[in-house]
Length: 131
Length: 351
Image 1: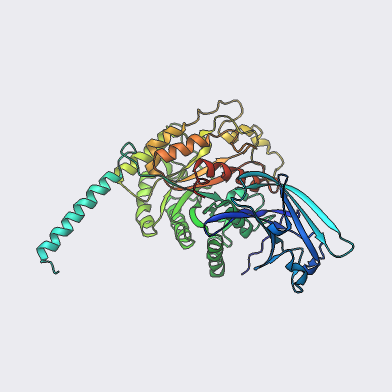
Image 2: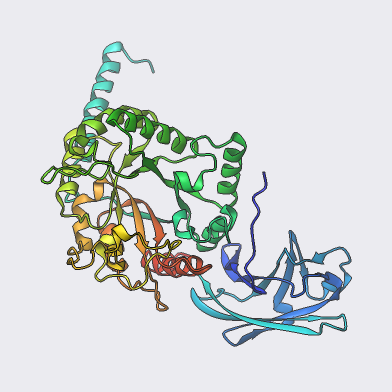
C-alpha cells in the first residue's frame, strides 16, 4: 500500500525546508524546488540554480542538486542523461552554510537557469518558516 | 553463589518493602521533589483536519511533523483510522512503516464513547477502542463522549465528561475499566477542557480518585485552552451549515467556553498545574492564532511550559490547532508554534 503525498502549489516547497547536519555539525540547509514546466526537464538541460536567503546570496559551488537518492554538483548535471526533473517530484537543493539558518521566518529566492533556448531563467521567491 | 532458601526469602522481602515504599511515595503530591522534566513535542492530527484527505494525505502530515521534529502523534479514532474500528492488516502494516519512516511515536489516541443506552455497553466500546489503540502502538487514550441524549438533572454531581449515563457514578465505571486498561498497558481518562477549569470539582474528584486507588491507569489529558487570557479572534471554520433556527443563539464566544450574554469563566493559571500534574498523562497544546512574533494571541505558553518544567512533567505535549481551516494555514500555524516550543524547551541550544 503506497501512501501518496501531494505537493504545494508553488515552485518553492515549505515541506523539507530544514537545516542539515553532517558528523554532528550543522553544515547547511535544504529546500525543495519544483520544476516550473509540467513537461519537466532532463537534468542535462539544467544550467544551474542560484539561491539567496534574506538577501544573502550563495555561489554556484555552495549548492548541490538531489534527485531521489542521487546528489550532483551543478557542473555534473550537464553529464547526467537519465534523470528527469518532473512535475510531481521536487529536486532538493542543499546549500552549504556553516551553522545553517536561524529558526523563524526567511525569504527564500531561487532562480533556475536552463540551457534549452525557450526557457532561459525562472525566479521565484517565497517566505518560509524554518523550525 | 547459591543462597539458602532463607536468604532468598529475605532478599525478596527487602525488595518488596522497598517497592512498597517507592510506590507509596509515587502517589504523593507534586510538592515532594519532582523529577527532571522530559517534555516532548507532538502534533494532534486533528490540527490538519481541514486539509486532511483533501489537500494533505497522512504522509504529508507526517512529513510536516518530521520537518518540525515533532515526534509525538495524537489521532482521533473515527477520523483517522480507515474502516474503524477494524482497519485492515495491510493498513496497520502501512501505519507502522509511516511511523518509522518519519520517526513518529504514537502519543495519545482519542476514542469516542458512544452515547449508548447502558454504562456496560459504553464500557464495551471503551474496551474495543483500547484494543485498537494498543494495536496501533498507543499507550495513552483520551475518552471523549459522543453526544448526550439525557441531560443530568439540575444539581446532579457532574462527572468528567464521559456521558450522562455514566457521569454521576463514573468512579464505579472507571473501576470496572481499570483491569482491562492494565491488561492493555493503557492509561486513559477524560480531557480537561474549557469550560472545566483546574480548580473545578470535577478535577478535584479525579485527583481524589487517583490518590485513593493509587491506579497507574487513569488520569486526565489537559487542554491549554483553559489558560486563555482572552477570547480567540479567529475560530474554527468547519463546513458552514445553513443556520438551525432552533439554535440561533450560538456565537463565536462558545469557542473559549463563554456563550452570548454569559461571562467567560476565569481562566486557570499555569501554576495551578503543579497540584494536578502527577495525574496528567497528556497535554493538548490547544491554540487558535500564532502571531508573526511566534507568540499565541490568547494563551500564555511560556508560563505553561515553565510550570511543566517545574513540575517535572515527563510526557508528550501535542499541538492542537483549532483556528480557521483555510488550506495550508494549519501547516503555517503549527510551524510557528513549534518554533516557539523549541525555544521554550531550550532545544535550539542543544541542536
